[in-house]
Length: 268
Image (cartoon, rainbow, N blue to C red; front, top):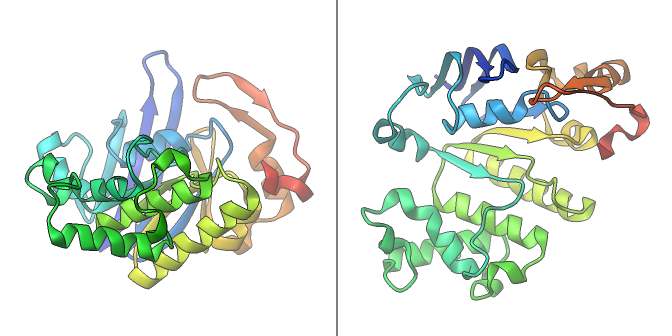
């Protein structure tokens, strides 16, 4: 069974802007796919559609064979439990401890929200949270406030929170865009190690071409809401890269020209 299926989805906003145009591809269980494209290519709209934060205008999205487009929140909950998310801006609660932020990853596993608060969490959940922090190398910072950590450390906390959820599918939205190059590579190394050791399915949105080449086995490239490549990393060449990034139409409908030095495309 395929983990994620995107079946001819389109998205047209009320002002007439077409963000996605009959996009189709699927992701096998345990496969890692890098979703590539510049600002305005439709990546963010696709991400929001897969997570059901947004509904496509037409087409279907299936998770483990279950159609999620149009599902009510109650029926979406068990499906969302399977999906862990890693965001560009970490989405931590800054004035709470690292430990508490990780505990919140168990929200889908408890009957009541208060059971994920540190004073009320079960011994099992507390031990599991420390194990998740250990996996990302941050047990020594468990009591530190989240906003006292570096960007790389905050993203590690976000990965630990994702692990707390026990997901089968990981959606990573520009996970290193807010980090310096060194911290970014460390986070990607960690994320990919965890993905491989747990056999997780991953869809990772990236801008950086050099990172995509290094970590991606399969690339799905979007341009102006269309899939323009669905192939192995070996299909990428300088000519295609230049065409992919040369000219885009953003999701608000404004056209923007982008000059690219293909030798430096990794810094985009």
